[in-house]
Amino acid sequence: MFDAKSTTDDVLAGIDLAGKRILVTGVSSGLGVETARALAAHGAQVVGAARDLDKARAATAGIAGLELIELDLASLASVRAAADALIAKAAPFDAIIANAGVMAGTFGRTEDGFETQFGTNHLGHFTLVNRIAPLIRTGGRVVMVASGGHRFADVDLDDPGFEKTPYEPFIAYGRSKTATILFAVEFDRRHKGQGVRATAIHPGGIATDLGRHMTPESVQKLMETFEADRRAGAPDIEYKSVPQGAATSVWAAVVAPADAVGGRYCEDCAVAQIDEADWITGGGVRAYALDPENAKALWALSERMVGETF
Image (cartoon, rainbow, N blue to C red; front, side, top):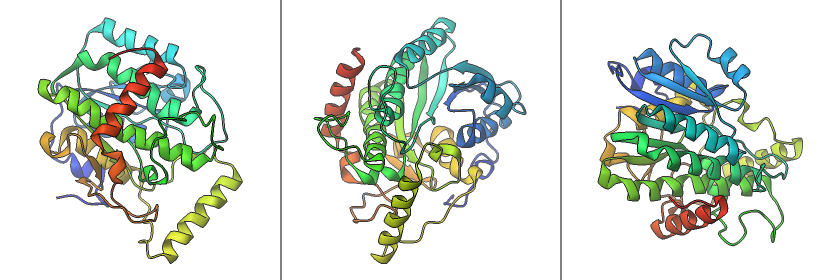
């Protein structure tokens, strides 16, 4: 029914979300704001999480009934505090959309010493979602916002922090987004027996502030990658508007059949197929990002890194 050009309003047309409660992370800009807006416009009670609450309040001022909570995914103390507050409130969720993230900045570490992209994009959400999993209603879903950038790299279970290998911004981004997909695979396996499903999605190429930490050198290298892909036969990138970019998140969370998307990777409001073409810019998903054994191994590593067993 839908495709790359479908918007949030297209996929939610005729959908009544009254009585649904949905958590969206990263509601201070871009896709997070649009995701929260669209869901609330159709009657959902939306809880928005953001690191900078002042920025989030300004960005979401027009969204009626939105509840905001503070969440810094680069700090496990902040993640645990947010999870504890949600658990204490004991209000269940019908969906969690893990939208927040960072992309391709210079090398850095989170408050807990993790490489910034892996720590923020993967370990922060890994800890948050697992801690609040008891709040997800039967029939609920977890939607992990990943990226076609997972095609840059598989996870490196032996060197997640670039302690043995030279740091490359987009390799780090690729690792973190592959981890995001693998988390959905393993979370789905562990929870589908209780009626809770998880999926990962690629929103598409959108002009947001996700790349705000990129250096001019990183931008140049990315453009060179895109040009090399084009010469090799990759399809041209078709950029999306923000409402088009957020469409797959809301589609996967409240519209698509649960059995169709559970444990899968979706793009353009559809389940993506495995694609091993050499280029980065093509669609589809690398097989390593859906490998169940890879997912189990990453889960075990992630538990060791955050010091919790789920």
